[in-house]
Amino acid sequence: MTANTKYKDSVFSLLFSDPDLLRELYCALEGVDLPEDIPVTINTLQNVLFMDKINDISFEIGGKLIVLLEHQSTVNPNLPLRLLLYIARLYEKTINKKKLYSRELMRILFPVIIVLYNGKEELPDYITLKLSDMFVDPTSLGISADNPALELTVKVININHGRNAEIAKKSTTLAGYSAFVAKVREFEDAGMERAEAIKQAVKYCRDHDILKEFMEKNSSEVFNMLLNEWNWDDALAVRFEEGRGKGVEEEKEGIARNALAKGLPLELIHDLTGLDIKTIARLQPGI
Image (cartoon, rainbow, N blue to C red):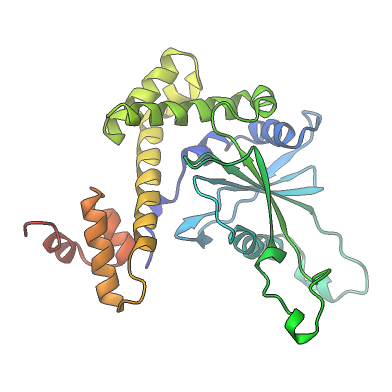
């Protein structure tokens, strides 16, 4: 299955595409102060897919740190492995490979890996996920599980509106983003269709000076990105609800029926399943 490129962009990535805002965000998340003249270089890899979505943002700070930043509406225990694979590719792209065989010790950027969570499920302000939690237990072979040869630690921070107030205070942009998402959900919970809820949330933010300049400049992009992003999240959820133990075609059709029942667009279902539009259309109820 392949993902249509228009479903890859996110409001979060667009909002934090400015190096100065990334510096502010990093300082807020890590509780540090960095001079404003320290350079920030965005180095997000293009077309590196995980779960049919690209990594959100990766960037370097002052030639010392490499920061991998993910924005998630769901958190699963496999994140450390996914992010290990991504950061390995990132190092591969940014190092001088010829020096790998040199007698001189290479110096590589210090890694920081953070996941920002703003889903609906309740989650503490902070949790930590470790790659070692995914390893099978080798003790039955008489081998100690202590001090594994490989480790990766992911800090997960809950950025939902009203959580982690100190971070929100230090990054008004992140606070505004969280308030915007909360307002969309509030309008949805009040009975609005998702598209209308997004439109009204954009208007609310512009009227109440929440990311006002960003919303005025990018209102149409924000609407399309968030609608597609959330629809895609719903579609992925459908995919994992369906198909266990079924044949490939039967699984695809089951996913398509579920997605149709949830009102997802035909084009998105095509991207999710690989079925052609005519086949999907025939699977609609009453046809």
